[in-house]
Image (cartoon, rainbow, N blue to C red):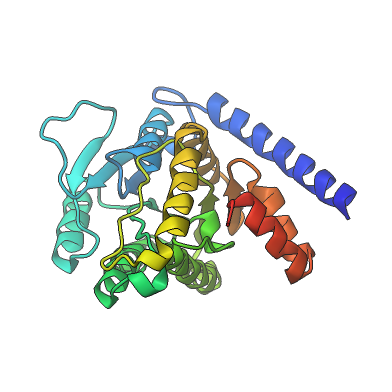
Length: 299
């Protein structure tokens, strides 16, 4: 089985590397190709995955509108940054209307806005949980409901949603965050099949930890019994972020999906991502729990 898994990961990594090379070579402004006239909306584009993705799509010839809850005025860059709070129906509608008035269409939506709530479940309040799901799940749902009528009328479109490997393999002390990503995985998987008749492509991107501003929010009511384990787990997260790959790697994957005629539903990206998912599917639960404890350094 180990030989099979190593072969599976090797083949997948070769395919990803080839696709990323194709993205680097695809035409940008002034070239030829399908990207030249496409309009992209990227949420959470002020930093991290969103910023890297918006910049790369712009370089590939997309007309890109990034969003942020509070964009800096006159911010330099290759794409325009619009104000957007995915938790506000009014904000979503204003942002979408602004883009449609200027372009008349939306070809690509990249759902990237989100945050992480830390702490043990017992330490988190119901308000913590509502806020986590309001942004990570219902925020995506608001964006979907806003753009889907436009894409159906166009007869085409694409939706790429940034999830997390923690939406496939849960991490303790990020349980609310993991559960919001698990919910997102189910919603987008169902959407994938619902939109096939309308020629709207749907994909999930599941990164591990990357060198971004990812930082879990502290719990509302921290309890001493969890303190040591929680702090240990948060150190694992911080180390993973600080030592992680550049978010440009995720941006290249998203750009590759954006120019694919048949993008897969799920794409895992980051150190050991494909191996961890493969082990989750193939190993007995008892054995996989040992893997989980080792990977996440669970005490």
